[in-house]
Length: 359
Image (tube, rainbow, N blue to C red; front, top):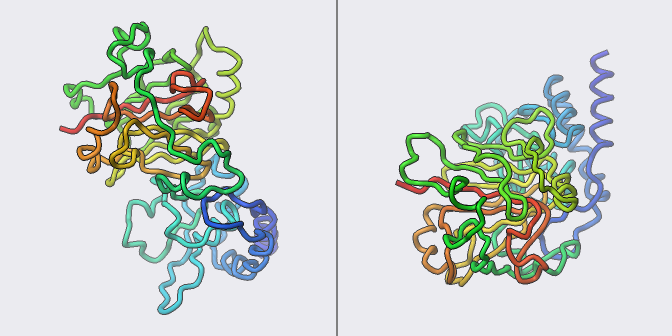
């Protein structure tokens, strides 16, 4: 009976593979994913056979939920081979269920929710190959050089943020009551005793909705709808002034993003089915005047704040007021010189990540 159940699970896993090209940033037209995956079929079935029963069911649950549930690690026996390496199990499963054009493990980033994240360099006797414990790495500036045909031309250049928006929450001269005064969203150096590394402010156009959300854990999910999820749920925040444009955009947030504070900086992982747009001081190219807006596709991660680069870059970030410890993220809608929205305060739904200043 158990052998039959395993066979059924293996067949179901194979049928659930992704057969549409992923929207990666590689050069040239991607090969037919169906042909590539058929060539991987024997290797995939060998992998399924090596998984223990519990691991096979966990993999099936992760694939079925498409990462909406945290199904835990899927452990595969660690095999160290000399010479030419066979396709790593995590790469194989990510190719099958997420990115058919994936080529190698260096294009992937392991997420904090994975146990292997916390024991780098010492995997032991097994390695996690849950495809939803990985994101794909986005390289800052690459979108301005090579773009797949699916990406609109409006993001072919780094978009400049004009820092003179009179309603900007970072503009000390703003007269909007929800920006300054009793709803102040800035951080003070005297707040270290609170034990947080960032605070989150959610905005709809020029109106901040809800209270500041304090983050002390290493990572946090920010989402509208995430079954079994915990973190900052935007779906619970009500507003009397919400219009139809905001309502439609909120529905696109879905699983939202994961924000993580790691040893090398702050990372954002786009878990939703729509792109997000990011503005950060340390994402701006060196010697850039103004601030760049970066488009992050679904399934990708990018380092949005690097404290080591902050000091060398913050003095060339623009002509107007700015916060060198703030990251701004718009859900589904971009802004800048190539969009009808010139300022992030024109975006229906956006997030301000207020990082704790260094000591």
